[in-house]
Length: 408
Image (cartoon, rainbow, N blue to C red; front, side, top):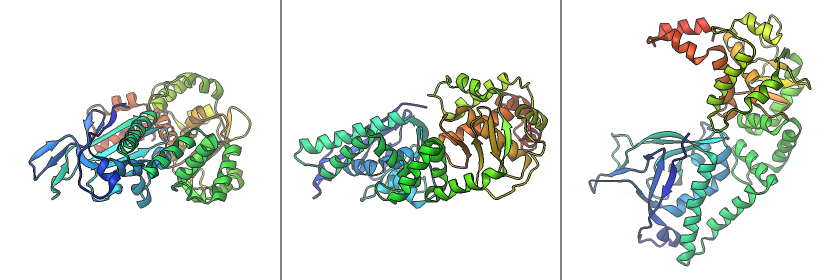
């Protein structure tokens, strides 16, 4: 993760009737991880510039209009997501950088695609980047930029009412826990502010209070408006067909791994958690067999061969009041996938909030799911052992041999 995210914007003159645009026309320079992503080649002028001439006002409005979705909504392959997360959606006659702002709930991925060389555009963006910044750094940089735009307009005698109202509303929501929670749920569902059905939001807030907001948020990120039906299916149908597993010393391990640096990325913390778990449970180097997992977690012998008893869209673990016990349902019929899903549940148990009553294993790109996947991978197939097994041979046959060796 890098904190090198900045927006510079020296003001320029512009002849246009729109007062706000005229007063906030600027050569905007955006830097991510030391890379100037706004560096452009001006074909007509035959020059290369570090900044591009854009409307700072239009950019500030778009950033605040999409504020909560930018911070909380995971990446989705939808037009709505692109319009609220891709800077090019600002439009208004300007050629914006192809920058996507992607949240996993705890950090922000800034992903920039340069202009293709075959493009006929007169202004070409030269640099690409894919870098992660902290949410705090993203918020600070964006709000500093927005405040500078507001100050510029006010200094020049323009009221900037729309932008100022958005800025004040966001500041109030950030400092009010009830409003903050409401906006977070809207964003996870893929709604703009005040567009989600009020009844739905209230129902999901209540579900979060009852089942754990962190766990419920994972379901929201996956199922969006169908989340109430998903939760009903899990607790009133799927739960009847679970297998009980025991996670030895889970509370002790949770306390031990809670001290791992949270400034790390989820997959980095997950790898260290998996290494600590293997050491605590005296797992020797090498592949982890089915029998070892059966013995360690006191699992029924059919856990890796069972078929789905009822259709479930996700794998899930339910907590039932016993610290070391989980009722697990694996929604895949394949042995290797069931091993992986099982260890994702274990990883989630070691890292999730104490108030969560269930442990959802989903396909969404949230920090929690990234942690689960990395934990299962490192536990079943430690990265150092995999590297040693493969050596210099990265061919398909060798990778197949590794998959068979580690049973992943």
